[in-house]
Length: 321
Image 1 (cartoon, helix red, strand yellow):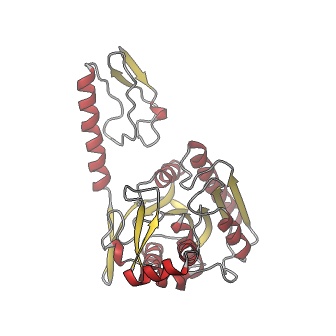
Image 2 (cartoon, one colour):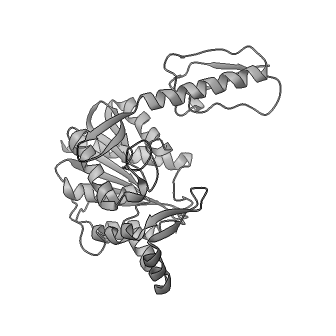
Image 3 (cartoon, one colour):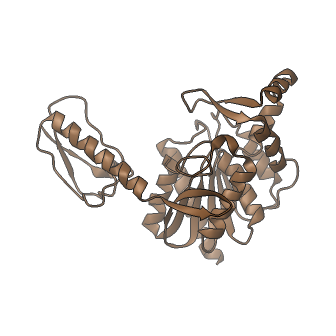
C-alpha cells in the first residue's frame, strides 16, 4: 500500500506542503514527527515496512545530529558557557526562558521559533547553566546564577527590544530580567509563572521536615516530569532563592504583561499568576486561564494560544513604535 502523508501535520518539519509517500503493509499507521532535513524537501519510499522503519531511524539520527551542530555557545570568561540557538530577524525579538531542569528543545520553544521564523522576527532559545547542553553542574546552580544567565543572553546576544516568554521557573526569571533591563525588555509572556514557588513550597513543609532538609543539605522536590520523581535541590539553593522572591512587595515592571495559566496545574497554582498581576506596576496586564490546562501547557490549543499571544504583542509594540 502506498500512503500519502500530509506534511502539514509535521509541526517541526521544513517539508512545507510537499507530499511525503510511505509504502507499507496494512498495520498501525507509522507517524514520523519532527523531521528537520533541509536537503530533503520531498522523497518517496517504495519498499516494505522494515526498510521504511530503518529509513525513519536514519532520518531521525540525522535530525538529532543537525540539532546538535546548530547549537552555538556564548563564551563567558567568569562563568560557564551557555548553549543557545539564535534566529536572526527584525525586532521585537523573542527570547524563550525554559522551566526548572528543562532545556531549549521543548515544544513551546520550537513552536515559537517556527512562528518567529515565519514572520521574520529574531528569536533566541537557550539552556541555563547546568541544564541541557550548557556547561556547569546543576547541583551548583542557584536562582541568582540563572538570573545572570538570562542577563548575559540579553546583553550579549539580543539586539533591540525583546519579548521574553518564560515558562514556570523561566517566568520567575523573566520578571527579574524585566526589572534589571527595563529599556530592553519590551513585553512579557508568562506560562505557569512560578514566582517564589520553590521558596513558598519549602516554607509550607512541617518544621521537622525543614530541619531534616537543612541537616541533610538536600531537598527532594517532588515532580512528575522525570523518572526519579523528584528534583534534587540543595538546602543552600533554597536559602539563596529567598533573596530573589518578588511577591512580597510591588514589582517595578511597567511593560505589557500576559500571564497564561492552566487551572488544572498541579505543580504551580494558577493563583500565583494572579498574585503577579496584582503586584506589578504595569496597567497593561492580562491573565488568561485555561480551564483544562495542565502545568506544561503542551496541548495543541495551548501552543496556539501562546503563539497568538506573542503575535498580538508584536502587533501592539509595532503600533507603539
